[in-house]
Image (cartoon, rainbow, N blue to C red; front, side, top):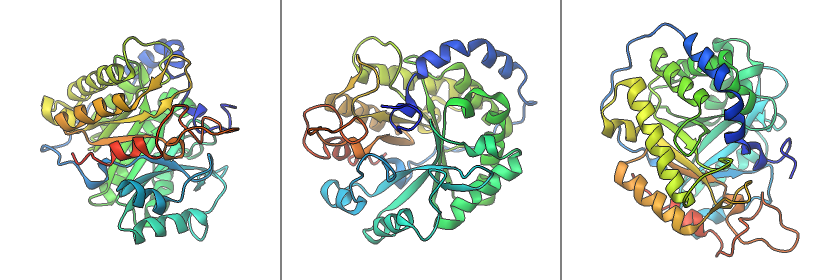
Length: 340
C-alpha cells in the first residue's frame, strides 16, 4: 500500500519517526509558551460518543453506516478525514464539499437511525489544516466551519506526520482547539496521536504540556497503540502500557488526580494485522482493552477502522479487511459494549 495515499499506511512508522525527532521535540518543549493556570476541572463523566469507531467513507470499500448500526448496535462513528482544500478551508479528503455530498448523506442516515458522528480532522496523508491555516484564529475558523456544517457535538483532531512534528503547528492546533472549545458550549474534543509502547512520543508529551499551559480543557487525549516499530508481549499488553504512560503524562501536565487523568485519556486501536509484520491486534486484545477502559472510565474507545472489520477475500487489501479470520463486525461489536 502507498503510504502517501492509503489511510491505513498514513499511521505507519510512529515509532521510527519518533526516534528521529527526539532532539527537535525536546528543544520545542523548552521553547513552549509561558505557563498558565490549568483549567478548573471536576471528574469527567464518559460522554455517549466514547465508543465511536472510525469509518473512512472515501476509501476501503466502506460499509453503509446504517447497516453497521443494525448489525452491531454501535451508535456513534468517527468519520475521517477533514483536510485542507489547498488553503485554509476544510473539505472531506481535501476534495469533497462539507454539505450536499455523499458524506452529508451518510451523516443524515446515521442520525436517522438514532446515532451521531464525531468528525476527525487530520490523519497521516494529505494537506493538514493545521499547516495551511497560518494562525490560530484562522485554524479555529476552519474547525468552526465543520462544527457549523453538522451541528457537531464532538470533534477529533488526529494530529500526525508533519502537523505533529512542527512545534509551531502543535501550538497553533492547541490554541485553535481552545478557541472552538470556548466558543461552543458542551463541545467534546479529542486529540489523537501516535505513541510508543511506554506512552506518547516526545512530540506528544510536548503537545499535552502545551494544552495544559494554554488552559485547553480537552476531553480526551487519545493514543493509537500500533505501528510501534517494536514491542514486547501481546498488543493488548502493549496498549495497556501505552495508556498508563499517557495517563501519567496527562496527570503531570494538568495536575489532575489519577482517576481524573484516566477519564481524560482514550485509545484508538487498529483491528487485526497492522502495518507492522509482527503486530496482530486480536479479538482477545480488544476484550482486554475493553476491560481496561471500563476499569478506568476512559474518555474514548475507538479503532481504525470499520472498513477493516471483516475477513479478507480474494484481492482484498489492508484498508478494507483485517487480515485475520473473523466474523463480520466482530471488533465493532466489542467496541459497542463500552459505555464508560
